[in-house]
Image (cartoon, rainbow, N blue to C red; front, side, top):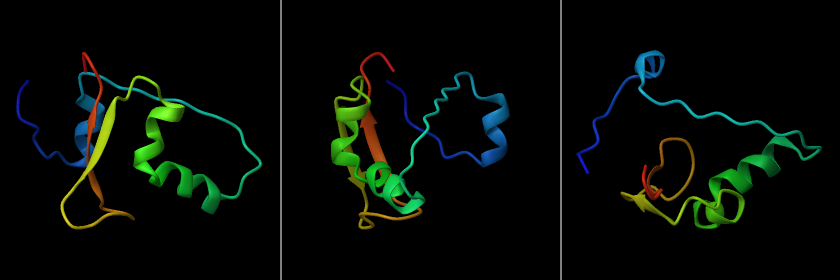
Length: 73
């Protein structure tokens, strides 16, 4: 597997792969973000993820970096 390169958000338009999804909920934005921010539970709602670990000192919030294992990805 190659090394990851940091890209600007403009790169998204030229990315070789794109994934999207959507869901409707009555939960508040804070409740939804709390679920999405809980990286240790990501495999519960996205079964293809086998493991996610935080990179660096920042454990939560905007700017937190994570390494996620997706077999074949």
